[in-house]
Length: 316
Image (cartoon, rainbow, N blue to C red; front, side, top):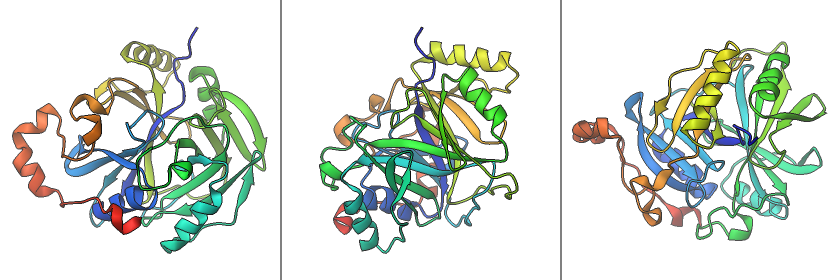
């Protein structure tokens, strides 16, 4: 039987200044802005989607940029570090690039036999770049980062929790994950154990709870193929006592949400239909796209949003 869940779909964070947000993820990291829309639950706030050329599931980091938002605090009950996958020979390139833009970067770290670096964006968002030779995804072929060094998509995510047993049970018994191994208090899980499906749990038994605001992750979404498999997941989770939402239409995928036992908000999102349903693939992210229900208020919504622009030449 095919697994219902096949890895990470997207990760959504809270940000501050919208232009600074676009500059960092498209300019410094070289991701493509594949969709510029609104937060469906707060229409006067942008929702940006950054990913590979097509916004493929497993590559998309999304943000809600709230102008003037204070910085959040990393802590237990949160996803504290989002890891992106880069080619095995690209660490030196990225260390040099980050330093070029004045971004403090860690020494090279080794984890489960692979090397990585760790840093933060302008809001304090925790980011890792993991160098590996196990990722056959292409990244963004014609972006301004040399293709041989471009980010391929997610590698994985770190959950900072006070206990792991109930979250481990959720992952391994109800979400098609399996335990991969433990290293220095870091517990690793995966569907196949490849870049794009890794979830690490780091125990923080006495740490303070995180505080969500700019620079923190709002939720992590996991992939499921379609609405049929999503309903199977929903039924399975509800059967085992999880408080799962109704299916919500997010235009580019459908979603259900629930909190895992450690407090992190989980989403199960469909791979279908994708980001090309309302824009040509060659022009993704160029216009502000609104859901049908928001179109009558477009003029008011656009006036409430701070104008933003791409600045690729500034970050060449």
